[in-house]
Amino acid sequence: MSDIISKPYVWTIAEKQVIKDNFGNHNDWPKGIFNNLKEKLIDYLRIQQKNKCCYCKYDLGFDIKQVDIEHIVPKSRHERFTFEPLNLALSCPGCNTKKSVKPVLNTITVKYSKNSNNYKIVHAHFDNYSDHINIVNGCVFTANSAKGSETITYCELFRLSTVEEKIKATKGLETSTLESLVIDLKNASNEKKEELVKLLTNAIR
Ligand SMILES: [Zn+2]
Image (cartoon, rainbow, N blue to C red; front, side, top):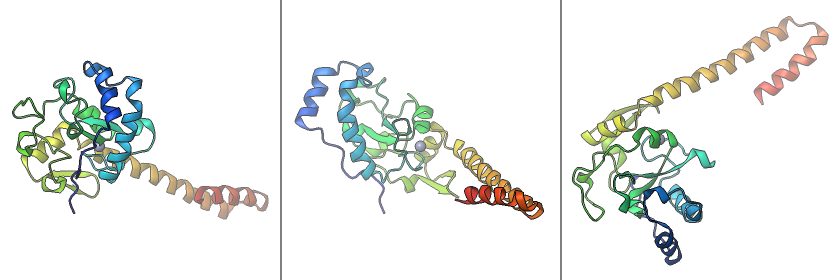
């Protein structure tokens, strides 16, 4: 099944006017006046991307700090693409931060290039992710192509195996807490038992 964004967002006439009236250069991107249209864009792309980050494919969170509008071609390098729908995708803040402003174009063009070969990394609108990257055990990223390899390097996707290990370690901690509570319960006096049962009930809830 294809995981390409099948259609870019289309700005409404009113949204285009807001952009026209308020966008001078890429530093204007954080302006509050754009919040409404960004929210619409996020809602739209969440569905298109099945709520996954375009680079690591981890689930995107729903709080404001858990999802970024990613400029595939960095807006600071090519600010004419700041509001270009084909240049926008959702990523997790981790991938966005790691990718930063690294150059992604092979050839600089005036109009937004629709040629997949013109991009050094996996492009959410033009490339099938699985053609370029395999995810093993949910956290080990291996490249199937030069693009895949560049994407792994640009976004430092190898960082996620550490994240996964930390998640497992935290889960392990919960299990050992539970085990020690069970042992305590076995050895507890009658009056202590009631208290421990409460703790155990809470722990497994
Ligand atoms: Zn990510």
